[in-house]
Length: 137
Length: 111
Image (tube, rainbow over all chains, first blue to last red; front, side):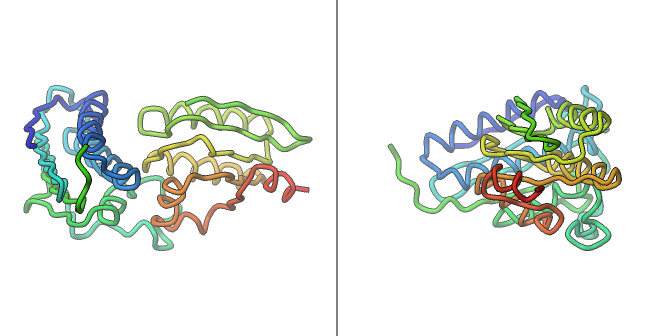
């Protein structure tokens, strides 16, 4: 299954996207742990796109393309912003980062997904989570 | 997100129910900052019925912990569901918080 969504950069649309994905994962009997991790990563990436990529401009667009089959979940999220330096994001688990209130979203994504990559300027993230063999109903 | 608050002596036991996300974290933050401003110093968050937490939820709990510590108070977390706990473990925030399997044990630890 493939979907291409074009959403306005608004927080309310984050739930719209993640609910749609969770419904499909549920139909595929994906386990709770994988669903939790996928939801968290999708929502964290969308929060970044709305907050940082689009600077909270609701008229800005976000492209969300995802594919789900019994083997894997793959999603690309692209905003209209200038991107960020994804190779040098501070590690929030180090002493100087542990007390900070921000900077954990990308870290969680990198830990919960099987593969994460960005386009060169950092305005598009692609994430892959292996689903393995799931039982169709 | 629902919050039920019980008192056991000077210990506030806050039972949270639902999901802690980017959409309700500011509201949660406001409730706890108010509680601390009203002189609550010993807080337990019972997270048994919290099924999901994102990075803004983590940030809110870090902020509550910092505010309590700077006021001479303590925050203890109890009853975390496995997946919610994993978010603390991966971000190494488990080092910052005190965890208890049950709220009752967290209450005892204050005595």
